[in-house]
Length: 179
Image 1 (cartoon, rainbow, N blue to C red):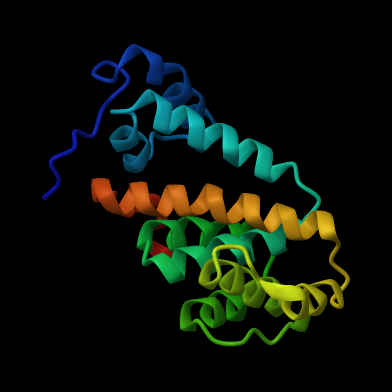
Image 2 (cartoon, rainbow, N blue to C red):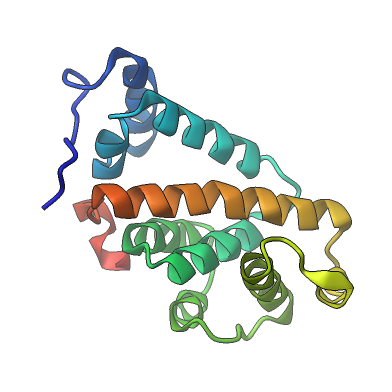
């Protein structure tokens, strides 16, 4: 049981309502996590802004999802894993990729595995990955810009995973097939 309130549009702080309404319109329902995070308009609005920025970066969509799923598995966020498994599916990724990510082992696609490895290395070293790890990431066709975008993604989704765990965000019915 959580001590946080799962807000509705009516009960949420006024500064959270516009973001909640936008998410509900896009998703077709109001995710429980959004209702829980709405307790802090700064948290909800800040996270959604960061996601919008990260979604515009030059990493391709599947690579971004590999990063997010790597962070979700590392931080134990079952909701994030389910949500981004659904996103990978919508992107046409093979179901095997989700299972490889869930297992936290090497990925069969070397380029995507480079994203996973670099993400984990950045976490382990608080960003001080070293020249070898950076070189290995770049050798898979990524750029220095992409390396910085990985840091943006790690920050964005570490924030999300920590907040979702704090509030006890459940996996919504719409995502249970991906949990």
